[in-house]
Amino acid sequence: MTRPSAIARSDRPVVLLTGFGPFPGVPANATSVLVPQIAEAARKVLPGVTVADLILPTEWEASLALLDEHTGRLRPVVALHFGVASRASGFEIEVRGRNLCTLAEDAAGRLPFDRCLSRDGPEFLSATLPSAHIVQRLRRLGIPSRISRDAGGYLCNAVLYRSLENARAFGAPVRTGFVHLPSTLVDARRPSREPAGFSRLSWRDVVDGGVEVLAAALGRPRPVAVARRPGRRGVQASA
Image (cartoon, rainbow, N blue to C red; front, top):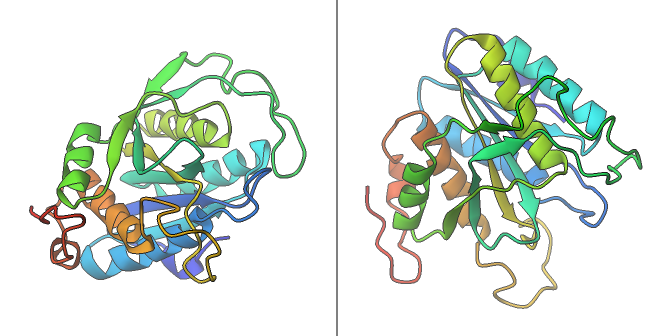
């Protein structure tokens, strides 16, 4: 799913936000709803930037082809990807992608095309987001966050690695990274049958946190709309 109005040609710098559709074990992927909402919020508080959002199919070949198409056409200055992980309890900022595919079926029931993502590529590529700074800013908002050095071996890792490869091919600085969110997040549009505290993050936490990650990637101060949010669990929101 793409938002045509968000990816029209523009002379302004472009940022690309992506999420995923469902996949085996996760019939409702929260990032398919969250990413458009983060993009909408970012457009309101980050002037002078074109924000494009894209929901990738959780399929080995289709996701990478769609990512290649959009990054090649948009040439974003920031490529920020979101996915879910069962291990995550807050924002997990991935710091590297690995040139490896786990032999696991995608949403179409297909296995990866190879055990590696790039036959000539290095074993690891480092994300280019200011990861430690992002974690610090999120924690100041009272949003749980940490750095992760293992993006797994499924489509999340594949998209991160390919996006970093694309950024290197551009020959221009592109801040590229991946954020894992809890797979227990519940779609805010649907009644939740889960007990209170099922996820440590509220829907607003994730939207505000997503905007904060993007602002940090752009080297901008905290947007006013995010800075004024009440602190969580007694933590004061500060710049």
